[in-house]
Amino acid sequence: MKLKKKAKVMIVVSIVASLLSGCGFGEKQIEYERLVKALDEGDIATIIDTSDTGFASIIQSYGLVQKKKDQENQTNVTVENTKAKSVLNIRENIAYGVTSKDLRTFIENDKNKESELAKDIYSNKLFVYESNNFKSKDREIEASKVHYIFNTLKGISSIKPTRDTRGGDEPNSIFYNLTEEEFKNILNDDLKLNYSKFREAKVSLYFSDSRDRKNNPLKITRIRIGIGFEEKQNNQNIESFISISEEFDYKVSNEKNRKEFIRLTQEYSL
Image (tube, rainbow, N blue to C red; front, side, top):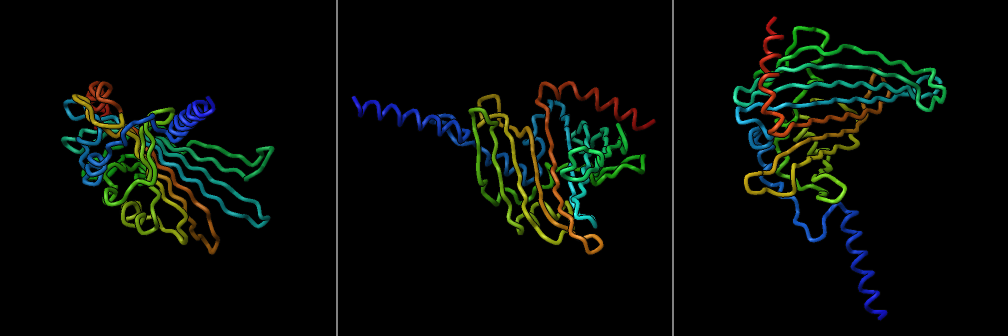
């Protein structure tokens, strides 16, 4: 009897451990290789669940957090957020969209929040992406902060994910912790960040399922990048962290996005 109870306990422990690790009991690993190879090659049609006519809605966010000490040894924090929503025509490699930016500054551990300031820099400004460049009629827009990352991960297929999750309470995803050398080769060739000290770089890929299925091939639904580093300004060390996220609509929604593309095209032409 005791052996049976012990066996039952071991089975329960195994199931719980499996769920906590993000895996279903007895489930296969995520079949990510095909899509990661396509990501490496910039094969957008394979990566994204576009409409039959080649349109895809993309939601982006670019966040920058900077911390620096003042003369009173207080930590001043600046948080900059840039968001964009666009519709991409993958056949012509052109996109139209709108972008907004806000800024917040405060002193770390200021309980009264008297130091906090927040302001909108710009809101719903139109831009166009063409020939791998972002342009806008508004000079105040920082095109470098509106940045597609799905076609700038060249070399990602040459490294192995450090972790994956599939099923359970977590999304189907894989994670990479990049070394500084991998960061330079895969990300910073395009981002061109100047830094004095590298801290970390992480890439997360989220998938529509754990594997390809009949009439429903696997797609990437989201890409996230996090980069931590230090930089020097006027001989002062600044701790910086950048987060970039890109989300893609499913085919059902993208079928409707052709009209939005036409509307944005006409609005930008005015």
